[in-house]
Image (tube, rainbow, N blue to C red; front, side):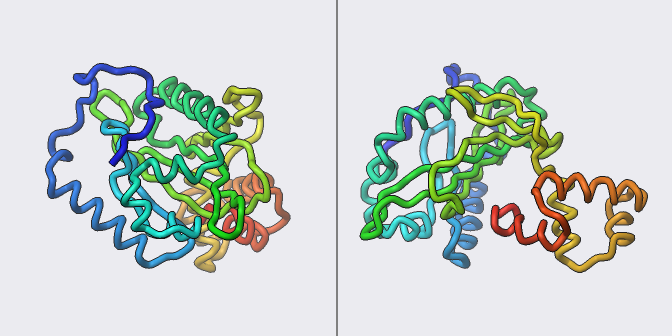
Length: 254
């Protein structure tokens, strides 16, 4: 398979100090089998693992090609070159600069904080028979090397809710910090992003728990939950929890 372009800051081979227990072929096989199974039970989202050390896609999904109207056989035959071919070539300069900016933000964070960073961007592909199609790509670190270098990323691809390219973002799901890509750079926004706690609240609301039950699950007071719930509604730009659940599904947060 043709290797991807390398957007990671230059590092020496010795710096890829991958935990030895994770290099075993049995562990790698389990990752591939698990992701392959997940991809088989859905037809709207493609999940794959990107290996930054080897600069290649570790496992792919037929969904990613189905979304574009192509066959998996063609993707397997061409490797990463397949995706380069169906991307809108006019977007490549923007994508390459954005990728480098995203890695810069990633490596500016302490290694212990990098696992909380999620990147998101829209891009255009050539769909067979339908012309341009906007897809949304999200990625989160799955495994880091011992020194904090990014090794494996879990990525997803879905059809975007946008009709045109949206801004690229990096979200810190621990703190709610949001970086927006503007004028060729990622800039820390004054907006707040959805955090891991927000996602938990959405999940508990979706399970039809009462406010008191949710506060107990979060181990906070009812008044604290009320404040956090209102902040979540403000982040999503909705008026009530029903609207929050709808927006979360629309944005594929849950």
